Length: 496
Ligand SMILES: Nc1ncnc2c1ncn2[C@@H]1O[C@H](COP(=O)(O)OP(=O)(O)OP(=O)(O)O)[C@@H](O)[C@H]1O
Ligand SMILES: CC(C)(CO)[C@@H](O)C(=O)NCCC(=O)O
Image (cartoon, rainbow, N blue to C red; front, side, top):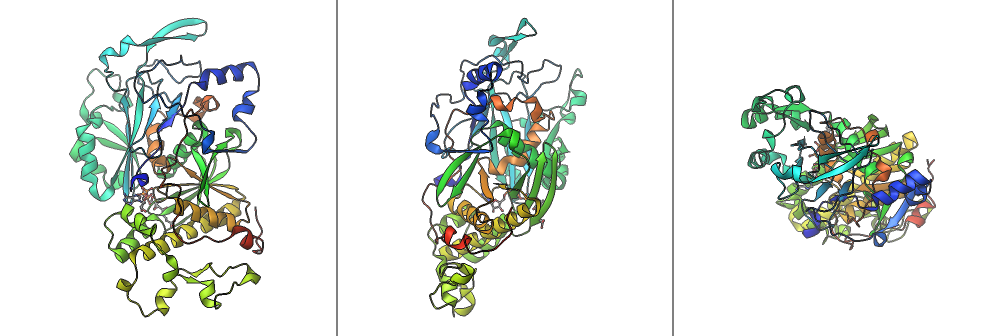
């Protein structure tokens, strides 16, 4: 199922200098990027000049805002971090064109279901030895100096947590663990492997710390999971254009956030379980709620009920399902009629799986496709509804959804969006992140240097390329979600 596996690549393009001039010379840049509140842009709006596939290219000199620092310790330079690629691409990368120090970072988010790994590599064919060959001039305080540009990329890889050995083998085969030395030892003459420290977040950072020491000889520096989720989300939302998008009734639209008007928002991370975090700023947040009915529930129950062998297979099944065979609809209860007085059409699901009790059917009499769809709908809708209620608690209008349950799957996103829209009477908006499942790993990766977003001139970052979400394709399968207007006009809720 091709589209289910892709993850986006970040690319920030060459409009940088143009934009920089705008920033310096006048305030017109606001018209370019800082439109008040949300600016929604359609996919077709993008300019597909995707000619930078990650190899060598002429790179613009970094400005004084570039993060390059010539210290004794390698620095991570996220300036001009760039999203690249299309929605179908597997293992997407983030380009770091201005990365000059030769870093060997990698970081992990070891969750209940999946291990997410982010690592840096230099551009192909560019060794440490020839890094000196490519230098650029920087004007800094009136003086010019040269320093090497390596350039490189961030790679995103995931493994099932139950197959941790595959992850360890991968790290070994790429020798990722031999590059990173704890800062305490950075200046020592002969750093050795025993001092190697890797950043990891998620419960597995605790659970598997000894195993990492045993198998790879590295210590795990544990970063808090919520800290990392928020850091990853804030980085993407502030620095990367077209990271966030809405998805309603099969229609996807990129959303440009005014980074001065980003906070507060609700971050809902739908992993095995679901965390709901009110984010007020960089490092300022509160986990306000959560639910144990999440991605693990869909995959776990779905596997039991359908005998599917993989998550993607289960998701794929849902696309051919008809939930009406198993869900009890309002029309089933009301003899085919709407219950219009309270705003429920006949096709509204009154009770998920409700028909399974009334039919004299056993599990094997139900189609796995229908079960999968009904389950997916039930869990997605529930998450959307609970999220909205939490947004309502704190007066938040924007809800960003991440986590690998989303999987860029159109029906999942539509269902969540429908629930948020319906219960908020259109006042709150569900948005999705293209790097959905990698927020925590990205946050852990950035924690090496504790790079604050304040260090980044994020408004200088301009994306060049259209970005498809990790997406199953435009066609929506499954039951109609209902008519929003019809229902929303009748439901009475105090809304935010
Ligand atoms: N290939 C896959 N294998 C297993 N689950 C997958 C896969 N792809 C997507 N999923 C979904 O993603 C969920 C896990 O998402 P994610 O990796 O964000 O969470 P996690 O970090 O493992 O969980 P938690 O944060 O609760 O510890 C699974 O429960 C499942 O619903
Ligand atoms: C326990 C975590 C944070 C682990 O990632 C996650 O699975 C989660 O948020 N579960 C929901 C737990 C609850 O709040 O009911």
